[in-house]
Image (cartoon, rainbow, N blue to C red):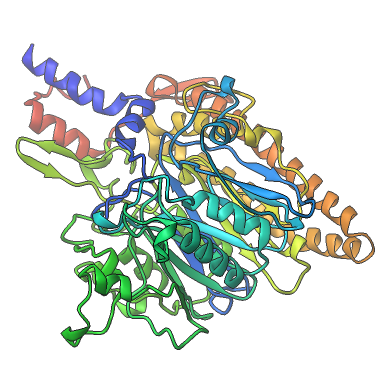
Amino acid sequence: MKRYGNLMKWSLLIILPAAILYAVSAGPQSQSGWNCSPVYPEGCTSILVGKDASVDGSVMTTHTADCGICDFTFHFVPASDHEEGAERKIYHISQIKTWPPETGGKWVKAREEGDTGKTIPQVPHTYSYIHGVFGYMNEHQLAMGESTIGCRRKMRNPTPAATFDITTLTLIAMERCKTAREAIKLMGSLAEKHGYGFHDSGEMLAVADAEEAWIFEIMPVGPLWTPESGKPGAVWCAQRVPDDHVSVCPNESRIGEIDMDDEEYFLASPNAVSYAVENGFYDPESGEPFNWKKAYSPSEGSAANTQGRRGRLWRFFDMAAPSQNFSADTPNMDFPFSVKPDKKVSLSDVMAMTRDKYQGTRFDPADGLTGGPFQNPNLFWGFKHGEDRYNAPRCISVPNVEYTTITVCRDWLPAPIAGMVWLAFGAQDTSCYMPLFAGMTRIPESFSIGDHWVFDRDSARWAFDYVDYHVQPVYDHAIKEVQAAQKRWEQGAMDKLPAIEETAADIYADDPARAREFLTDYAVNFAENVIKAWWNLGDSLLVKYNHFRVYDAEKRKAGRLDYPDYWKEALVEREGLEPSGAGR
């Protein structure tokens, strides 16, 4: 009986529902950010591509919104005119907190419960933009991505004196700014004057336009700060990614030594260095140059000595510039700010990077027993055994992702046509990127509907979760069908894009408003077709791989899925199984 009991435990590992796996993998989330820990933050990955580093001259950023319990809805905010003397209310908007759909959801309740009672002067005209948890792109193709980076504990400011959090800063920048530099300076000045923090700790934003990409990092200045102090209510710094370089932020501060005399590549608050000196984070008498990340968010470790838990930085640089032979043993703090890629990067390359799970490396979670009998890279999330902790590698692509954005900014078309957000709901490996344009006047209604705790066939996100759920049990078989669907829809959209843009540009020359409607109709129709295709794909996967069999509808036959040899050998050795005779 003991043998069969053990065998049942092994079986549970094979058939454990994906929903339970995801609940475990999501883990507890900090209420002051996706995860504010400066040591092993689990939040988001943001990739940046300069215009001369991309195949077509576009500037790109990404955001993998890794959470597992956060709001995943997307919304469109139209442009608006405002009366002279109008005020703009400021809200505290948590990245994490959500409310049930019947209450109106996050974007109704956050404004009701997060009203700070403070305002700033409204501008005469605000721009249209697309947002999720953060603002992602406005009609002038100002674009952003995000990654929580943490800061020293004494810097945090959860008090009401901190008027701004990172979400609100991004939304106001979307409303008011046309360029990355404008956005950085506006967000920095608002945080300095009115205070930054409350829900958030150290944060990084990838801020881009058609010309430049910047890493913008901002941190609170402690709970004792007040506006009456006369001191900046935040400390921030921004560094420009060279046009022929790529960079990444995997929940770690990325800015090192700074040159405040070089305004082409650096922008910062007036207290960028002095705050570190005042608080003992940096000694100017040490003879060492000031280093931003070492002062405010030091984080030790490498890909190798954390078993891949902190391997995203190494993995990105290794993918982008393999000729440089970056070592997994290199401390993360020693990696360069950016790197020139071995070859120019395409949109497809960036999509693949966001889906990366260390395939073919020493940290591949699908390799061997950790991937289970069907080589599932989402199965192993680490565990504690006795007094020891065993880390799982932390990939760029994780299952507890709300959505992923890839923003594309280009300078050879009018901004409403040139700016794009490629959006994938849910896990990147089983989802599909859908194109949205900066000049759209609406987005699909299904994008703005949904909640993790209520299954909803009217929600776009649930179509992708539906497919994802049916992939997990027999991953290495089912993922091939998803990849075929991704290629059909994503490559199909990219192949058709030049013709769509050419038509839109011709219309735009005579009637910009009609061109926006043309782009809107195309993008909404494409998204709705993808969502329908994914619901159908989920149904077909359920039927085909039901009961761990393969049901061939054409031949009306079914057969069991076989286990790989390494899994059979592990079962024989672990359970002491005895052969029952040849062929029986």
